[in-house]
Length: 150
Image 1 (cartoon, rainbow, N blue to C red):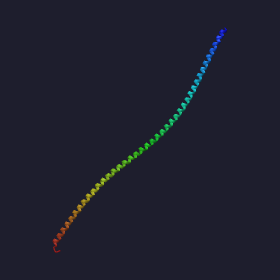
Image 2 (tube, rainbow, N blue to C red; image 1 turned 180 degrees about the vertical axis):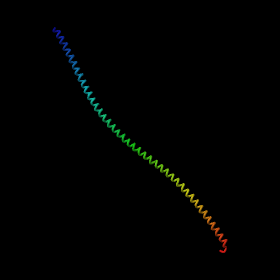
Image 3 (tube, helix red, strand yellow; image 1 turned 60 degrees about the vertical axis):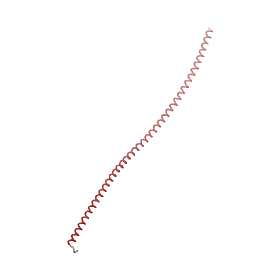
């Protein structure tokens, strides 16, 4: 019975050592898991901070780009307005040019008519003067023929 107790005690000591070893391994395992968990939470916290920072940067960039796009849109609208005004101005200038060319053409035609009318009147006046001269010569010749004593 003493030997049974001794054997039993030996088994209990062995079992206690095994349990101590298991407990020590379990504690090491728990410590490792806690460290990994803490590291995971730190990494998660760091990632969340980075994500928040990136979201803010993205929002700032988006706002900046939207502002730039709006400024460009305003520039484009202004340029389109100015282009339209220039087109209208060009159209008016072209119309004025056509009107001016038409007026020049009419002026040339009128000057030509005036020149031809002056030539006609000049010829008519010359003809009348020749007729008048003939009449005067005929009258003078008839008067001399009727009054030879003169």
